[in-house]
Length: 346
Ligand SMILES: Cc1cc2nc3c(=O)[nH]c(=O)nc-3n(C[C@H](O)[C@H](O)[C@H](O)COP(=O)(O)OP(=O)(O)OC[C@H]3O[C@@H](n4cnc5c(N)ncnc54)[C@H](O)[C@@H]3O)c2cc1C
Image 1: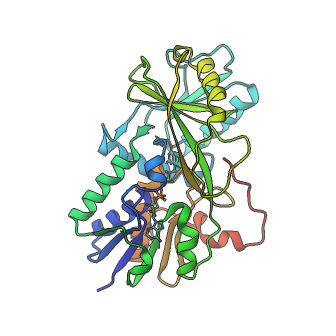
Image 2: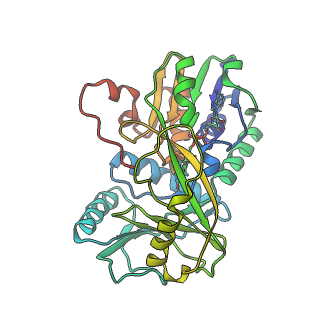
């Protein structure tokens, strides 16, 4: 019997293991040196959107949304995802993306701003109301529960190096490069620090969508009676260090108060730092990468929302040699082809 070891029990590994079992694999090990959702998945914002700028990533997100819809509340709240532009040029970019997204069947549309969101400096907005926000660790634990029920063996506190298997799937997020090296595969993945800030309790509309400022990247979502805020650091901070940077609190609260005046007076009560697993072009590495080695990593900040489709596609590829979704845009050897690698979009 073929034993498949999936390394990493974050959203990606959990989904691969679950879909392998659904596809009929009988000897699947889900191995994590820490615990389920102990990595980036446990830190994530939980944004679930189909509004990407390349067709390949729109497709991954579109094929994932049905899974989130089936899970429903409290795992997934379909409150929508709204991008607003504060400049005519920004609005043209959003509208250009909208044309691509709509051509791929994603119902993005021009949108009015939700109640409470300041609009006197806004040129326009687009939204997809099938998008929303989810609870990544809860979704991942649910996937693992289903996988185990289908026969997957979960081993927490176990390094994949301790495990014998006929095939390996590297789903170790920011740690994928070191795990790949041990399996003889060179993965161009670097950890990038990403910080989320959580406000004090506020009186919030229950249906507030994820709100994203297109030009600045500043965005916020409701999580219970609080808002979670994020924005890329002015200078990218590479490495595994996860210390909170309190120096940005004032700036982020000012941005929030400007965009959502009802949050005036809010404080930052909690902060957490997690790691993006960045590739040189900010797109993931998915598929067969070496002798009986497969990858589902390098998600560059988008892996939770893509994980249902990624898990299904990887499982199909491993079990039958081909996947319904075309994974060729995500092959590892795109980095060897000598051409210019598009700069990472943070
Ligand atoms: C702050 C932040 C916000 C984010 N926001 C979003 C968002 O809004 N939407 C979205 O889609 N994505 C978001 N992401 C990205 C998202 O969290 C990940 O892409 C997604 O959860 C998939 O993670 P993963 O399973 O690939 O990796 P991880 O969750 O990091 O899991 C990797 C696992 O591998 C294990 N591991 C490492 N080494 C070994 C080893 N040698 N042997 C065994 N196990 C090992 C680790 O313990 C870990 O549990 C965010 C990430 C961060 C940090």
